Image 1 (cartoon, rainbow, N blue to C red):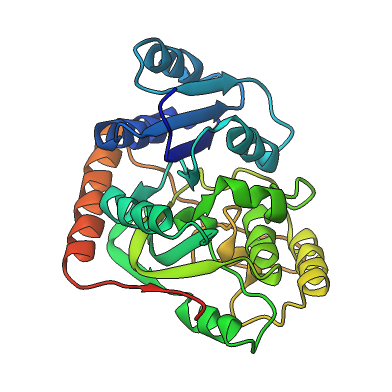
Image 2 (spheres, one colour; image 1 turned 135 degrees about the vertical axis):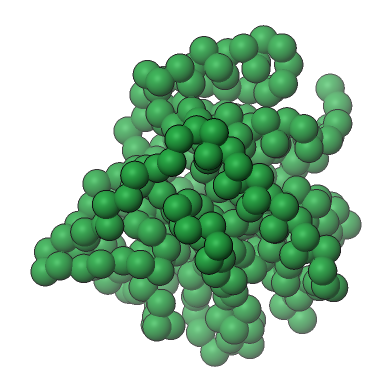
Length: 299
């Protein structure tokens, strides 16, 4: 059986227009030593039939369609099903630069001691594609590697993780709504060998269907308190929810006393979404070609 160096893993539920864009782009970029693993939460919008056709024609290598208890369980299924030496999470409605991802993959294959690679990332609103925010966690990473802080948060949308490291890091905590925030704190707190890539692996797109789990301010606060205790997290003037996929419209969270209130914004039609995503793919690829980016380790 051929060695699979990289597994792209996707968890999805009832977001077929976005999933089609993401998978068609990924399939066109897939390398011979890579595979695509998709976990569908028993969607009712045609996703299951779409994935079955892709699987039957060999365009995706593994897929399951069945109910999930929550997002964390779905992503855990994907990680357990994957065969790759390296795992790359692909969120069904975000944009990825596969050239940068391949650079990270090559670095990890050349440096087998590296467990996780993280990168800078981008964020935008679907209905305001002219405004793209550049985001970095490099200052937090540098404080962490210099021993000034015990843990730091980062978005898992841009990370690559070595599958063998799961035996130490573990899977997502299914009791956390802010599962990726908790996971980043755990990864750093455990002193995992993290390398920082200064390029951009991803562009997070927020839209009217971004919220995939119901939550409220109280539960987010409770999880934040729990994470701070578990991982000696001191905070860094960044809302914990900004680094979780349950965030509502990146950087534009609106709080009332006991609940989160997202702005009411309807998604454009499918054709318009395709045009917007073409713009985002062009943007992130051009950005990554515009400069020299480096890998920073813990030495």
